[in-house]
Structures are given as structure tokens and as C-alpha cells.
Length: 232
Image (cartoon, rainbow, N blue to C red; front, side, top):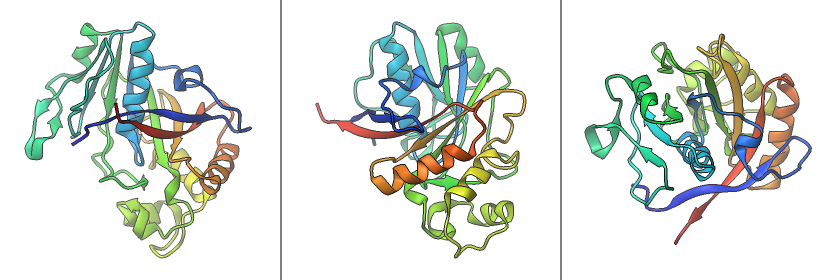
């Protein structure tokens, strides 16, 4: 259960410049979906909080399963889902229909079992018809570590990248995973696409993040983030 809020503590551009808001670089669509691993829910909450504090009515939901938020959310920000097993929230029958109640609808559309990286299975991600922007999230704590230890569905990651489970994840492999039509860019072909490189807490992670950013096309908005807990 989440009993503390998460907010961006650090948002960085490729040249190391700090930014105040994710939305200054990644402009949300009316319906925006999050995929990947390493901080999707935290990123959705951070972006939702930003937008709500700017006066937008924002709803967070899921097409998979998420844990409910138990701390007070910002004014104009809410989370909606159907009760599911293990205390989680599952999808409503028509997620896109929630857009009628808000200015921006944010959807967690993928699962990674808490791991930094993943490759999608055949049924993933669950992107709604109305989604206009897909944000791929990747955890930088997975850099330099064996694929088998830091990836959800490591066998699919290995097949996609031509690597072995014991091989270590590199920025080059991570960029390939992000850009692949069978990787984190799956189902984003006709939609806007952006990237959040999360867990950029240390110098090594930031260095890896800058390398990944350098390998992405310039037209793909990308930021590095690190989140802190608000213990109030």
C-alpha cells in the first residue's frame, strides 16, 4: 500500500539542466498511457499532480492492475478503478469514457512486477483506442546488471535484443528496447511517444540516462527523473 505521495525531486534534460515540471518537456495528450517498468505509477502520479496543480481536472486509472493511493491526492486529481484481487484496482469497463469527467486522463497500461525494465507479451500493453500519447518508463537502476535480474519477461527481452539472460543491460540495449516496435514502442506507431528515464538518483544512473537519451531520435521528448517521498 502507498501511504506517501511521490513528487519529482529531480528532472533533468540530456545536458544536465534541471527542469521544474515533466509537462514542460512531455506535453500530455487528453488521454495519455504509461508503459514499461521502473516507476510507471510514480510517474503517473507526478504528472497528474503537476497538471492538477495547474488547474486541470485529472483522473488516473488503469487497464491492468494497480495499488490504490491511500494518501490525500492534489485537488482536482482522482484515481478510479474497479476493485480487484489483493486489494488492487482493475480496469473499468470503458476507460476512455472517463475522459468525459476530466481534462486529462492518465492510464497505467502495463505491468512489470516492480522491475526496472521489461518487454511486452503478446497481450501487452493494453492501450485504449483514445490514447494520444504513450509514455515509456524505464528504471535506470537496471543498467549494468544481468537481464535475468532486472527485467520482467527476461526471455522476451533476450529474444528482442539478441542477448542472453546473464548479459548485462547497457544503455545501447536499453535504447533498442525503448525504440523497438516489439518493445516499449509497441502500439505507439500512430501515436505521440515520449520517454521517462526514472531512478536517476546517482551519478552512474544519470550517466547511463544521458547515453540512452543521446541514442533516441531528437523528436522523442525525454526526461530523467528521481522521486522523493513526501512524508507529511
